[in-house]
Length: 484
Image 1: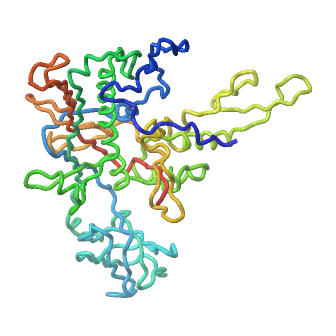
Image 2: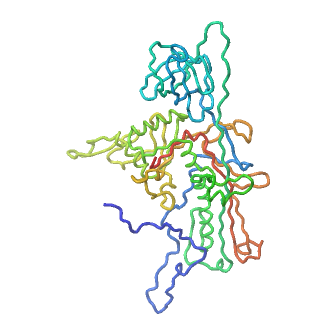
Image 3: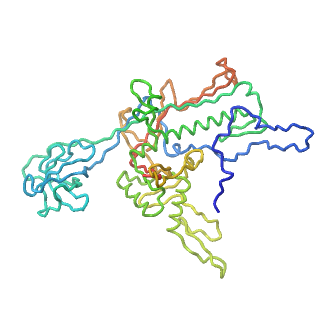
């Protein structure tokens, strides 16, 4: 039977700035013998409502003194082109051919005379080997080793260098190659929040004891609201680093938020960085071993990090469990005599039929180690939980089901520090100096609640942070979502 739509769950926050009449007993008719009993403590029906913890688990926080963070990431060591059009075979000489490179971003061929190439037609797979005899800009003239040439004029080919060969008594290699680095950058954004309550309402005592996730408790409603504002702000410190995007040129956000001579607004969140520079699984959840083989093959083409953590929503977690269970299911006969029993072999040891069955897995190995962890942010109905998946009408709009994060750290050249540094693949940079630390600032203004720095008859609690997240080696991450 399907889960009914009622009673459902609240999507709006229940915290109020002041105690309202709905929070109190309103039936004060003492002639009424049916006065209600009241519980002294607020019931925590939604459990722990905070969703932050992801970045604390996989990253670190480090100070930064600049408006911009820049770092360099290694390019590929070997050279390969995949969009090379063959000219007429036998031109400019017998057994030779001129190839024109049209790969995106290529301005000159990083191939030198004397190097040997493996060349393959992209559509048919036909191939030959050749030695480079001339290079000019984006054109490469080769002489084939084979007498039978399987490549025809106008074929679009891929080519990569596998070595070199020179005649006896010749000079050395002409030219040299510089190391290829890719420079990435991000900028911090300023996050703020505020809680305010006037002095008169602070004197009001509620009739029920309240508590919050950080352990604060008491009978003062304004205290609960202040702590919930703090918890909400701490959640936003993480979710902003996950969801943020840079403001596009000509956008309304760029016009509204830019300050200074160089227009800028927004920042690169984790999802944006992985969507732009990482790997994306656009078919919802991988549910078969062949799906994971495809994922492993892609990771082979990237950094090949040995250990990876999967942060998933509940459905993707179930899909992984069901896939592994389907590979490992058995039927047992260990019940009482004459009675058939059914068991399952999950994990390293068989579950006894008399024991409670563990129907989940914490990880598996398929080429690499994958450890699975539920991500509350993707399950919470007030955040990404419950968003619809892609549909047949518009399959480019869909929900995020999980994120594969490489474990460990990587070495990058920090342009601010001017040297190589070990950094977690994901880490937060916040603005700080000897005089100002903007990692997490909070201060109280007004003339109530212990504050005495203003003539305002209220207590105002201010929250501020300035930070961004750096996603190093985004090519090692994979985002699981609906929609291509």
